[in-house]
Amino acid sequence: MTSPSSPDTSPRPTVVVTGANGFVGARVCDALVARGATVRAVVRRAGTAPSLPGVEEVVGEFTDPTVAAQAVRGADAVVTTVHPMQSDREAQQQIGVVGTGTIAQAAADAGVAILVHVSTAAVYDRSPGVGDVSEGSALVGDDANDYSVTKRDTDAALARVDGITRVLLRPPAILGTGESSVWNTLRPAGMRDDEEHRHALADQSFAWVHVTDLAALAADVAVGVVTPGDDASEGPVLGGCTPVNVAAGAVPMRDYVQVVADAVDVAPVWDDGPAWTGRIVADRARAWGWSPRVTIDTALDEVREGLTTA
Image (cartoon, rainbow, N blue to C red; front, side, top):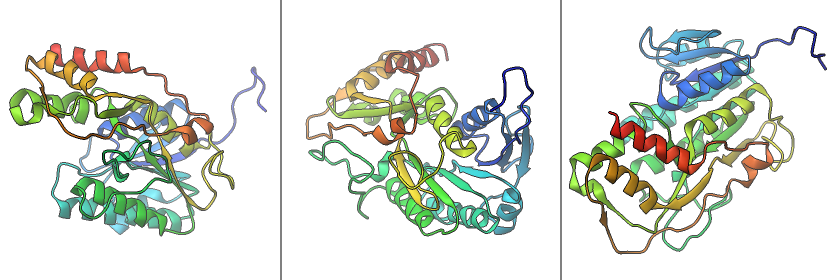
């Protein structure tokens, strides 16, 4: 153990982050730099990687096997954050499922120790009456929406990649500021501009996590703060593919929708009908040492402030 007065001579881990200029990816880069990592930020356009000490920009398509192999060479970990959820089914299939599998296989071939993939709790069946959802719960069927199905299939593709420890982070709604933030920016814009987007089931569960807390767990796993072993209740399974729910809590949907509606000066439309009212159980993440710091009140204040000052 290093004494308080001794310089830290431990090597800086090198972590590759895909989508490093995105809503989640940029926060992951922040968290990795804070933990002393060197980051290879994979982006499509030059000059768009986070401007942080220790961040090296890698320009190219990670879906290209050649680019992927170059990006992961000599790295200690990879964090994948890209999925084009606003695109059509074919794009989600090619970039999300095939592309993520491509860089995962490149990482395994290069001897990278661990891959952390930002998946989603949308892979779970959350039909009315299902109740609480844990990592062992049923997944959506093929009749679900394109995003849920292609994210489910991306997880399955990663499960088939041997020779590397894989962790599937499954967050619900991700709150936090950013131009591409679904819940702080894009959905509020939809509610403001289109009456159809103001409809909601008031009692439906709004399970959530703040992006900084999600990024903190991704970084801790990538740099080895959370140590792999043989028990998923204590950490990633070494050489395996371990899903872990990353949810801070759940509130009724009315809490989120009313904040947005008030901020953009529209009236919500409360529909009648059955709704999922369970929780995304995150006991595994908490057992790994994760403890979310952002409260729902703080997160919703952030939503409100961003909309009323825009």
